[in-house]
Amino acid sequence: MEIMHKASSSLSCKISFFPSPDNIDSPRTLATPFRHSSASSNSQLLQLQLNRSKNHRPALSPLRCTASDSVKRQEMAGKDGQDPRIQKISSAIRVIPDFPKPGIMFQDITTLLLDTKAFRDTIDLFVERYKDKNISVVAGIEARGFIFGPPIALAIGAKFVPMRKPNKLPGEVISEEYSLEYGTDKMEMHVGAVEAGERALIIDDLIATGGTLCAAIRLLERVGVHVVECACVIELPELKGRDRLGDKPLFVLVDGA
Amino acid sequence: MFAAENGLKGDPRLQAISQAIRVVPHFPKPGIMFQDITTLLLDHKAFKDTVDIFVDRYRDMGISVVAGVEARGFMFGPSIALAIGAKFVPLRKPRKLPGEVISEAYVLEYGTDCLEMHVGAVQTGERALVIDDLVATGGTLSAAIRLLGAEVIECACVIGLPEVKGQCRLNGKPLYILVEPREIDNCC
Image (cartoon, rainbow over all chains, first blue to last red):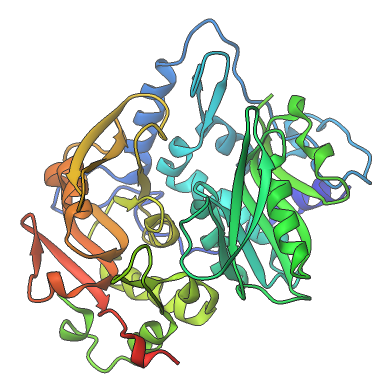
C-alpha cells in the first residue's frame, strides 16, 4: 500500500526540506536570555494539555491508511508501521470542546504551529509525497490552508493559489457556491491564476464533511485543471468527507476520530 | 526602513518582486489602488526570493516567534518561521481562534476592528517578528505590537505605502519593508 511503503522507507532516510537550525536540538549559547523553541513549545503543550477536560478521551489516534479509495483500507499494524513523525504531529494538535458551538470538538492546529519540529515534519511529509508528482499548483483554502500551502508550494516548485471567501480577492474571480449545515457559502479563485492542463494539489488543515474541498475541486476543474489529490493534516472520518470527494484521492496525516 | 536603503540597494530580486505585484484600481472601493500580492505567489522564483530576503535578515537575530496577521500574513509568515526555526503564531480576526485569547482593538477608516492571539502562545522574553503583506496606516501592525508587547523585535512587510515612508519605526518598533507600491502605469 502506497502510504505504508512511504512510511517505512522514511524511517531509514528522513529528508528535511528546511535546514535544521542550530536551536532545535541543542540549547542556544547566546548571552541574550531566551528560551529555545522546543523547550518553550513543550511546556506550552503541557500547559494546554492540562487544560483539556479530564472526562473526554483523547480525540486523536495514530495514522490510518489514507491512500485513495481504490486501495483497500487497513489499520496500521501498530506503531512500527507508522512514520515516527506522525505521533508527535498528532499529539501537538489540541482539541477544544464545544467550539464554535456545543457538541463540536474543535481540532486546533495552532499548537502544532508552536512546535517547530512537528510543524516542520508536517510540511516535510507532504513535500516528500508530492515533490515528484509534477504538481504545478498548490491551492490553499482560506484561512488555515494558507498556513500549510505556501511552504509546500515553495518546496516543490509550485505556485500558490489562495481559494478565498467572497469579496476578498481583487479583480476578476470565478465563484463556486457550496452547502453549509445551515445555508450556503461561496468560494472564489482568481481568473487566470491557473491554466488548463496544470496539475494541482488542494490543501486545508482539516476535512470534515468535504463540502469546502469539493467546492475547491469544482473551481479548479471548471478551468481545466487536473486535481491530483486533496491533502489535509486531519480527517474526521465519521463525517465521511472522503466519500464526498468521489474519485479524488485524499491524503491525511492523522485522524480526529 | 526599506530594504533598498538597508543593504539591498540594486538587488535585482527586489525589482522582480515589485514587478510581480499586481495593482487593481478601485478595490475595495473607488480611489484605492489595491496592491495584489497573489500574482507574486504565482511567480515561484519571486515568491521564494521574498521569503529568502526575510529569512536572511532574521536568521541570526534569535527570533523565536513569527506572528502573522490574518490572512495574507499567513501566506508569508510560516515559511519564514520554518526556515529560521521559530514558532508561527496566527493573529486573527475575532472569534476565529478557539480557546482563550487576548484581544486588541484598532481603528479603521469607519469604525473599529479587533485582532486576537492565543493566551500562552508567546512567553515573556521571547523575540518576535510580526509579518503582514502590506503596511498602510500602520493601524493593524500597531495592534499586533500591542498584543505581543515588549517581545516584538521588528515588523516586516512586503509592501509599504507612502504613509509610512520616512518612518523607520512603528509604535517604537523598527519596520522593514521590501518594496514601495506599484503605480498602475508601471504595470506590465
